[in-house]
Image (cartoon, rainbow, N blue to C red):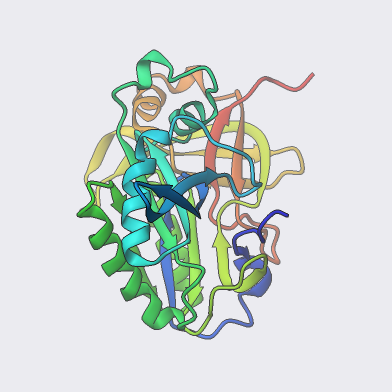
Length: 295
């Protein structure tokens, strides 16, 4: 019989009017979710009964993941000593979702370009702990510190406390500007519930996308107001006449856009956004990609 799945969050957009502040905003690092489990059995050796513990790495969908076995022994030792049977974690390779996906999905061994890759494990939660998150997050910090003594590259997601909806969106925008996927907001009083989709966790990430034609390339400026050598955003006009100034442009692409705007103005582009306001505008639009022209 399969075990209950890990806890999952709901959308901040759907529950933002019901939350009580402060919330803890954790940066999403574009990792792949891990269900780290142990099994224990009895082995008789030299007439001495020893507890044998093995570790399994499963995806959120309960599918096996590859090439993580090199970490099993260290995880097994750490989790046995600490009396832990299950952890809610993530794995991140070279700080890239594409690299992580290829790493854990390659059933025929590691791709050559990933054999010396940086592997990190994000510790999200300990499902067996029943304390509220206001206490549990400090417990998890200590747990991550202890696991590192077993030479496990365990980290905790960067976090900040937020006290208003405006601060949520400002934190989200800053995270996207740094190249992160989004945020996970956590209430201070929630407890971990296996198999539940809960509003104790609220996801903040692009929910919708749109496309249109680039009509203007806008220069980036520093925090002091000085012009930079790249585009900071582009104005995209959609087929319904609505428009959005979309930031989040890769710096290399931004330099090409500023140097040769004529190569980009008139092209179709796709952007993502949180939601549309009452006037039809786009909240927190972020450039996604240049796309093929519509027929």
